[in-house]
Length: 246
Ligand code: IPE
Ligand code: IPE
Ligand code: MG
Image 1 (cartoon, rainbow, N blue to C red):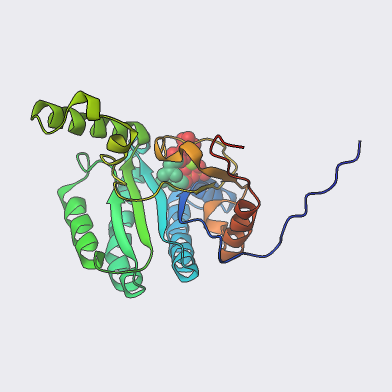
Image 2: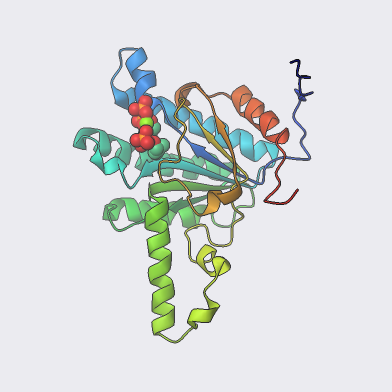
């Protein structure tokens, strides 16, 4: 049987951009391995890609981007790699104060602070304060972030409010849960991109991704280009989001 090819547009429609993009930046290790380099070189190259992609999203007028930088499960990696990633994230935050803040980006870290070093927590607060009055894209860096941890954290906060008599059990609804997540006040991600050909969430924004559109690409994160971003958004613009309706 012959199927008519769907007439897919090949140009970006700047009036129909996703408001919030999530990015699971995967494949740094494989990128390095292919080149005979240590995994750390892949993470370093991935950090450079991140800056380029955030700058472009901001330029395009996208309002929110959440990037998965370190999951609650990534502590399982060798200490040497974890230490490298933490140092890289620290210098990314420091550097972002000069570069991304100059580009008007609001930088926030989402995830649990409990396992992070004091030094890292101080740097996060400093960068968040430094950029909080900016008016460009909001960049959530998911750092020691896990979707399940986030929901547990929200449930505990709600229990505390119940215990303190600030609300009743009948008040608990989906909006209340959303309002107790790290992304409080932000719209859910419309579009989630994952690089390196893995097709799973790996504990990323489990609550918020209920109606997100997914895009999986073989490209390894350090190779992900501005053109790849545009191609992904063009694909997003061809999707029919029905939210359970018709
Ligand atoms: C993503 O790249 C970065 C982090 C998870 C911190 P990986 O390090 O997972 O790279 P691969 O998946 O091993 O190639
Ligand atoms: C997800 O990638 C976490 C980040 C991108 C930070 P992983 O490489 O940790 O995920 P799995 O282990 O392949 O599911
Ligand atoms: Mg990986």
